[in-house]
Image 1: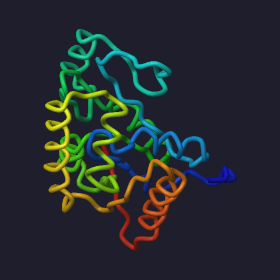
Image 2 (image 1 turned 30 degrees about the vertical axis):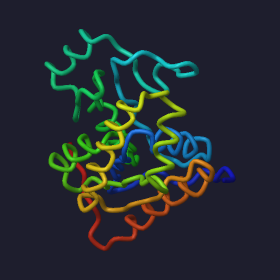
Image 3 (image 1 turned 45 degrees about the vertical axis):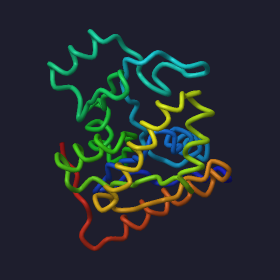
Image 4 (image 1 turned 90 degrees about the horizontal axis):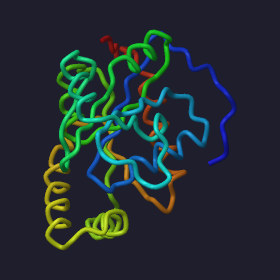
Length: 207
């Protein structure tokens, strides 16, 4: 995808865009491509207690914090939503979202399906986009390559993915995530947002 020219990012009704989908579907890859393409969103950085993986940068991929720090933030109600996933805590900081919306900027959040459900309950006008794998076989291959899972662990993740796909009615858009064509995935997410901007009755998100 060619880098887009800078466009007016201010909006009278900025959106909260929630990108979700099963583990291994390519949420991080899609967001990374959106950033590299220069798509003008505020990308909210999730806080997590999981260990940093090779190549990841603190404050860019995630905010890597201790479990004690995470629990302090929970007590102070500093997360829009948080959950424990596969043994690690993940949370979406409220402050990043409120600051972006106050500046008229569309904010993009990446969460699992449980997190998307929580956000939808708190902010009904959030825009929810589900990334769908091309096939169950493709998702299994991605999980094997990324995590090197045992057959038992792989079965657990695929089972959860199937359950999550049964929640599609909660989402506003479903986009197939092709890791061999991330430009298309990023462009379709951007197109979904552009479509929402054309509504006669705009979504109003307020924290």
